Length: 271
Image (cartoon, rainbow, N blue to C red; front, side, top):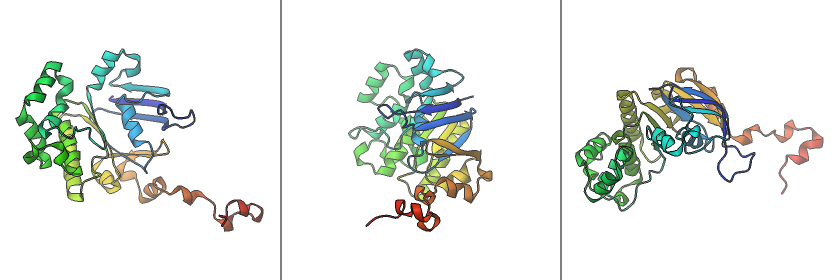
């Protein structure tokens, strides 16, 4: 089992005790599964990915990663466990003055010594490997370009090329398609899924593109207000489920004509 969560609740540092980012999350994710996370903004998708990556510590509940409790391990052992994961944030942390070749090769940092990392900054250790990782994203011609010369979509795909360089057993990808057009979105998603399948790596991808999630992933998890609303095969998720997941909170408010006269003043906006 790659991830096992039992009644996990998470609160961000500095947040009020009642302000939970995740609430009573229970999930089991097997090695090699490919899962889409969907839900409205603020639903907890990023918080869940960061929890899985051991970047957020649960306030309560049980969390196991590769059949170990990472938060019961000493720091060095937890770091070694985390090196088996690849977390790709929505905005890749790419230094603007760095060359693309160095930015992509940074995906191999968990396997490098400090000496190798420093040496590669001066002269890239394996530019051919970076070229091969960029090619599926049609970015091979940007190998020696500076990161700050890339468009937003090119930066996102450069971040995905890092995943191909890594030896990760699980990819945790946060909104990788937000700056891409429909054609590039599908291409990027297919590259990630093909790579994950090739190495039997787990892929968990948060998406706002609901139809891409339903048509390309066998399992879809819907989050809202930090809770799992549904966790099902994509074929079992209907339009009504999607509509309920993304329902505007204002839709839950009673209309004035539905409120008894004595209470109507409390819900009718005042001029």
